[in-house]
Length: 301
Image (cartoon, one colour):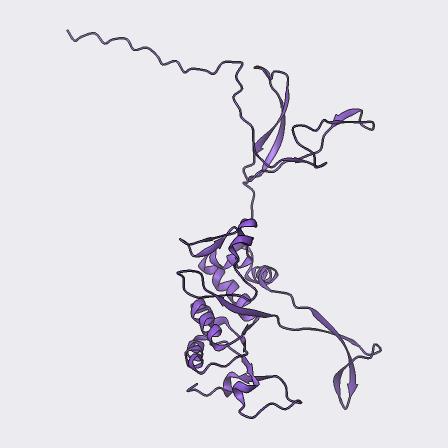
């Protein structure tokens, strides 16, 4: 006969004593509208409602609803609580289901930098229309194309990269603002989100939104070296560029920069400083900036 199996005892899970709470303090950033301390300020009597009230603002990193409950056992029996119930979103609309025309409008709202409007008055002179300052003439609103100023920045042990002009990394001031440089990823973390992150969502969104950010702005560079750094960094996005403006001329950087522009099939204008396109000295009456169209640039530039 086989040996008899020994009876096994069922495990008994140890339950915490009833008098011990099963929760801990929650550091949620919740605060009072009055600005006082959440745990010390006492609720105030309201005559209009004949109740005690306290206005609280609750912060959480996920969507929630509030469910009022009463504790039925334990040392806090009879206390009232507000439980945060997570919300599961099932009713949503997919962005890519929108028609392309509407998606393009959304890209414009997110990515286009709005220029300041200039107001003029149009008057008919010499068989044509000219801008006039006379308030009696018809009003004309002119919106100029926004220029995005580009410069470069080089972090320690990293290659030089193009950035918006005005970017200046100060480690001490950045730490106070909660911003830090991540050496592993080679990027700044902790800063406010940028709308340009839209270009990294998917290849389709990149192809649809890139013509807005690269084609509807003019990019300004202080010299040819900065322009070459920018063009080499954006890679295939050079195809969408339309308007460029460069101030300083560097013969050593001119040929590499213009060689990268071979991919810019939609390029319309390049504005360069007067000294870069003309050998004679500029007279006081000359314009400070000269515009060269693509058709005027020599093929061996």
